[in-house]
Length: 424
Image 1 (cartoon, rainbow, N blue to C red):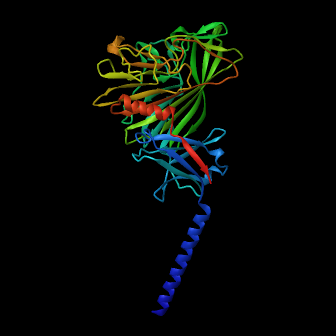
Image 2: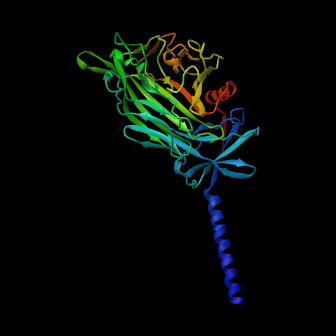
Image 3: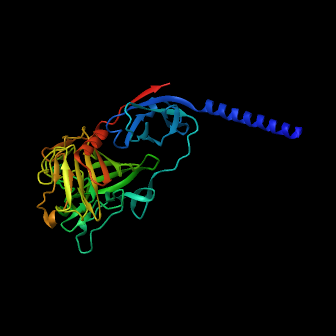
């Protein structure tokens, strides 16, 4: 009996000693490097909002030894985070909706990061890159050359476009090769009237056989617990005589989808377009009613079952030729409802950007097309040796959105919550 007690006592001492060692190890190797304070505002109380900081400006500790927690009432709560490195490290995380006012406090920790698996994943499927979450596809980027239906001129072939773009419930919001516009490719970014080396080129209306846009290469692909992303090179190609071709302009297109906001039944899609001249010759994007980021919407929509509302209060009846920070495009999807809010960033050229919205009188009962067109009322000259950037965000949703919620979403895009960093 005494020996048994002695054994249990020694075992307890050993257990306490091991616990003390583990605790000591944790204290030594889990170190708070910085506090990251996020001011709560209307956006952080309504939607999931992505925030980011320049990680290299805070710490040069290796990425594999860093993680993030939220400090709440003396507890350290795990936070999904992601580090992006395109030459300089940026730390991203999502601020979840919280009705409490005041400041949210997060901490950057040095130690052994908790294990995590990607929530937003990328997969390759027969010439297409698919971004999914929990096996639900959200977006498909097509890099393989797509040909129009049999019997249609192959000049309408195209690569480097998004289709389908899906709602959180899986309905398709885009359309390609509509019989009235075979050159429409879901969500895509060509330019219509372009002056290059004394020649006017059309990269949009492919039937003119003056030019096209092609997928060039993947620059990067990333999946993770906060977002999935890819960067691709698109080449704006001018057709010359005798079958010759010349690249006039390069486009680096960056796509980022954040993990969905299940509370609001939506997710965020960020599109960044970086343009530069591919030769010593300048490129002039000339004034025209189309050009830039275009969205040919699902064939399910028409003037009877869909609606458009802009930040200026315009509807489908008067939105064309107006300007807007954002535009809600939504409608019936079978027994469901959904759509997207198109948002433009304040530093974009000719902001707030002119809108090209098809009027209700368009053929086929009013098919839906929406386009941010920064060159709709003026030229834009691109000089060699300079990058030109356009930034957009789509909030893709099921349900129905109104102006107040759309404005809150845009504020979160244009003016994200400020992160105050205190290095310890």
